Image (cartoon, rainbow over all chains, first blue to last red; front, top):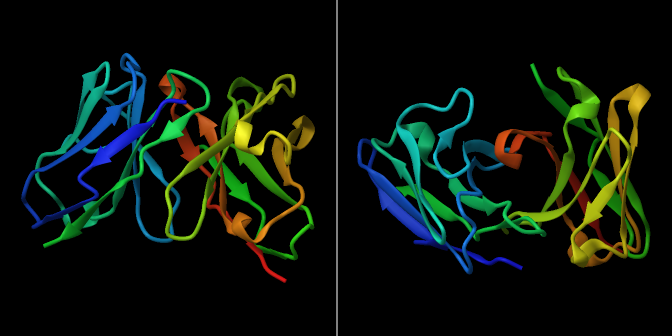
Length: 107
Length: 118
């Protein structure tokens, strides 16, 4: 099973700041990585698929990069609605696995 | 647009079973796999398996292999997931999700809370 490790666990930032979230895979997964945002009481929402492709309707301030084992989700300038938990997920091997999440909180 | 609407919250006793439905609309039902994901209170996301609505094929995570059954009713565009022999630590929100580009989970149901308690 491929293990995804997200860091940091918590990121404390102010609106307007840049957020950089990391996801590291226990083995190479090519670019088979997605990112999701989850707000309290809501289902996850797909942000990025195949490491760098924005899903439909996702603002341009969200970008993904990386391949192999190291991936990054960047939010260029945090909006109030961006404070949430973010998960990465790989689909290179079964079972699909998720990272443990990074909480982006208001500083 | 795509919608996935799940059945309502359930309360079950340990050892019981629960069957959750996920009714879909807005796309060709048989063209996309449906996945199920579990989220325990305050915890992360855990993939349970998928069903291919076209032919009913399934694939389950090893953790759930023995206790989970996914089925579909094509005429009703609905997918079902049944979990047997519930335990207290099965208390969680269960989500169905439609596969999208890059085999991502592109569209999600609203979630179904299952509470297991004696």
